Length: 127
Ligand SMILES: [Zn+2]
Image (cartoon, rainbow, N blue to C red):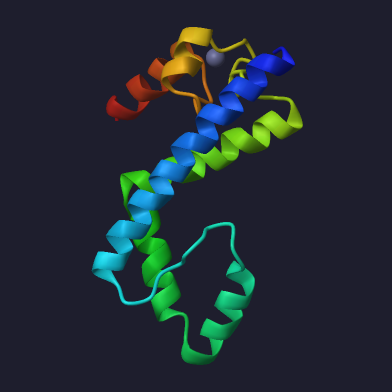
C-alpha cells in the first residue's frame, strides 16, 4: 500500500479510537468511581499502585472495557495501527491478499478480506 494511503487510514483509525475512548471514559465515569483517564497513559504505575490495594478495581475496569463493544473495537484499532507500523496493514491475515479499499474505508481495522471474513463467520455460526 502506498504511503499516502496508509496515512489516510492511520488518521481514520486514530480519529475512531479517540471517539471510542471518549465514549468509554464517559461511560466509565458514570459507572465507576475511578477511571483510566488515558489508555496510552501510565498504566504500569497505575497497576503497580493498584497491586497494593488488590487488583479488583483494575480488573473490573478492564473487564468492562473489553466486555463492551467499544472496548473491543479499540483493541482492534490498536492492532490495525500496529500493522501500519509493521507494514502489513491492508493485507488479509488469512490469505495475504490485499483487502479492498472499499472495505478498509468502511472498516479501517479490518484484518481479513471479505471472503475470509465471511468464511470465518460461516464457520462460527455453523457450530
Ligand atoms: Zn483473505
